[in-house]
Amino acid sequence: MADQLRMTLPTQFVLRALLADPQAELYGVEVGEAAGLPSGTVHPVLARLEGLRWVQSRWEDIDPKVEARPPRRYYRLTAAGAQYARTALAEAYQSKRRVRIPRPVPEPS
Amino acid sequence: MAEPAMRAAGFLPRHIVRVAIRVVPVASRGRYRQEFLAELHGLRRARQLRHAVGVLSRSWALRAALNTPSEAGDMELVYSRLRRPKRYSMQRTAGGYEIRDAEAAGTKVFSSTSRRAARDMLRALNARSRPHADDSWGRAYGGGGAGGAG
Image 1: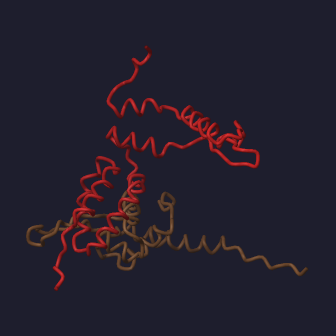
Image 2: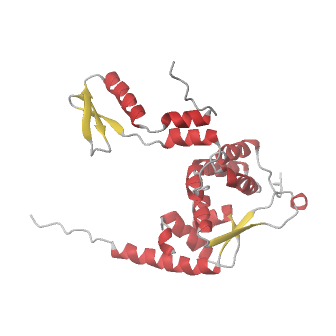
Image 3: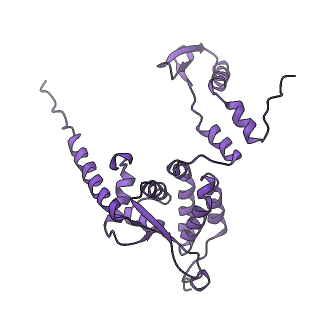
């Protein structure tokens, strides 16, 4: 399943943010702040992760009149998603290490 | 003066979010409208605006992520006009202007010393290379457009 997702840097940042506490539920702005990504960047990533069922979301259960704001959409990793995310992040880190090419040494003239 | 506990979403950020939402596939539009508008609440005015602009700038990425074809004809039109790949490209050279075919490994198809002539040719070539361009216009305006030969 991990090969269906392009592990772009924003994806890795979002997964790291969610993996910091896999049980925690965060809404879009909080995910963006935790991941250090600008507004709007996290939602496409979250939509992809949700499509892969790595992430599940739900509407906040509040009374909008009491809270004086609309309910937020909260995201959290699924149990399988947390496993996949750890593996995918480890693979991304390993592959990054593998493709690192040493800087060529200048030849003496 | 003390800040209010929960700031309501301002008019401009709400408007920007509504514009951004128009790109999102119809099936998901309601959900993301609610989600983005809810996220504006509680942010400072400047942050609301920044957030809304961020959402707008990434709305096409969100559409791609949701990966469902649009059911709205007008959105199909916007998509097809903005995302339609251009096959030919114009380059400036020492001898004037050259048009190259991107699909045929950069083969030169036209050259001219006149920028205007090259630009007109580029437009004509790119318009001709777009398949189904007429279909998308026809669909967008709700007509078949088939009875045009007069």
